[in-house]
Image (cartoon, rainbow, N blue to C red; front, side, top):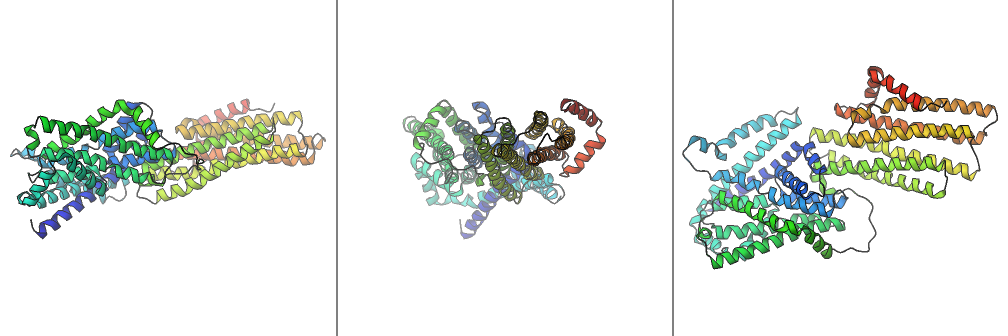
Length: 581
């Protein structure tokens, strides 16, 4: 092996790592909403958690990326530590798929149909299809599919180049001696851990091992401990991602490390005993690409089977290793690490937007209650809720803009735009709730009162606004278009009731039944309630327009009012329900 072979090997390795990286990113973008759906189904159920971890890792081809996502989710409160444990277990199994794909390069047969299975046979075709799709600039999904194929072709070309360049290493005595040294299981474990820690990808590390195996000098006795070490090395990414995170996220990263260290330690000990006592001939045989893939899968499955009954112990162990501190709970923030995984970042953003919508609704309910049972505590509660929604709007707006600047799919881009529009409406709902609570406070401080008739009217309008807010929020949370369509007719009724109440109040003023000063507060009350219902109309309109890939909310509402036959029927039903008579 000369200097030119070394340069070729470096070039092949670079293409291999680059291809794996861009293929993973494109797979993630292409999965888009499906990946968010998988992430959204995370539950305490161990089978679902493991399946989710396996499938997500299989999609993005990186257990390290999946674990970083898990750390980010725990940090953001979207996942508990108990859920994270099972997802990490599933990710360790899902990462073995890459080795099976790479093992196709080891197929050798004269049969034409078998030869077609070799990547060198079908990769050029995939590259051609990929470049055609990639140049279709008008369709993001076609471009992403093309990038996946091009990434795979680059990965396999790099693998073939690297394998060809290292073929001569088999004749070099020093290289042969190196893998004789790795027959020591502990040195092999250390080598695998260091290599994987450096490139931060166990899949890529296994691919490099498979390429070296083509020299014929890598025995199973050396390969298996290296594979075990690769599982420990891949923990570096998650540990780095947990730096600066909250206690739960650090525990999730520690689970990944502890899972792999304990699993590797137990099976390495068993491997050493079997090797020392039984000395099976298989361990001296040259490892094949397929054999390494089988060993990689078997080891990870055995680790999962070993640790699955110990999930409770794992949780207790990391809780002891990262104990509870005395520090105050930090304000809610969005995890910047998840920006590298748009589907996860959007899921985090959507969850926080959902929480923001609930805070706005709670603020309105508290504000309306303050008119019936006015206490200083209620006003303080409303102001605290509004302050939270302000904070959520600030961090979500900044986060979603940063996310939109990244290369994301068209579907994810539209989802980010929808959330950007909605957070403004949810924040304004809380603002109007503060206005309502302060109006109630003003009445108490100035010892002003409304007539019994006025208070009855206020309850009717308040109930209508509470319902329209509830319908709009549920339409957003459940993406329910039918429910969203009921918001606009109710909003129109709110407008009608508000105008009727204004007219009735003027008549009471003329009869001397209400003071002018109280009338100013009454006018503010009507204005704030009407504006809350306006924001509800915006929310529902945004939900409907997103279903048609359009963000022109006002055109959607006009179409609903003038073209939907059911609109008038719903409008009349709400009129009867919220009549002032």
